[in-house]
Amino acid sequence: MTTLTPVEPFAIEGPGGRLDGRLELPDPAAGAAPRFLAIFGHPHPQHGGTMQNSVVVHGARALAALGGAVARFDFRGVGRSGGRYDEGRGERADYGAVAAFLRRRFAASLPLLAAGFSFGAIRALEVAAAGEADAWLGVAPPLTLARYSGQVPEQVAVRAALVLAGADELVAAPSPDELARRFADLRAVEVVPAAGHLFFGRIREVAAAVARAAAALGFAPTAS
Image 1 (cartoon, rainbow, N blue to C red):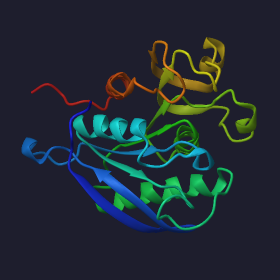
Image 2: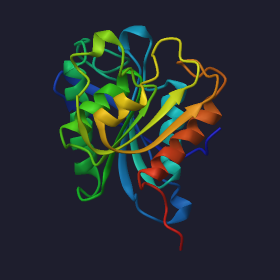
Image 3: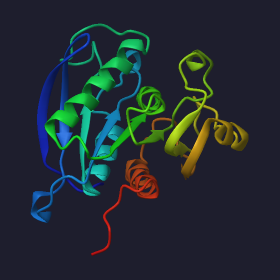
Image 4: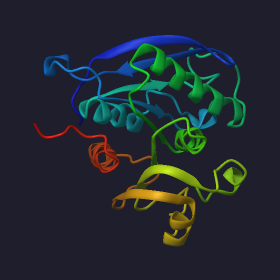
């Protein structure tokens, strides 16, 4: 699995109530402040998605190991977060509130990577497409799922990367034409072979793919 990183609980007042979360931080033994900020959104709240999802936890740790201060949090109505499920609209606002919190907590000038898994990847994409993040990393994003057709941004200008499940039973893989049309600056498409949508038994591989995709986006330590 990915390297354990320091974890700091946090709670903020979000647009729909309290948002409960965790900060995965770079190893203090390295003696360096965070090099970038990141958020890792979780899967669908009405299908068991929480910030404790294994892909979210290990994906966030993989980004922290690259030097990021990485927030994972429960969307409204999940766990100890207040409010109720809002079909993606309020959850996008929740994501934006966590981005604002990170910029208050750390240097606002640090680049922000908007990341997420499945439902969380779409919320991250909305934030990135609106220019509120410097790059987007989506794990198994439901770009082609009909019920997201009104929520997925048509064009994204920021740097983008994807991690896909090679045998995703829920989400069809986007075609090369779809990716070229939607993403102006697609840096990487990582595929975990034969993995299902939830990546059961493949967490080590998906975390490694997240790290590679983040590196392709420019979020990797520079050689000293």
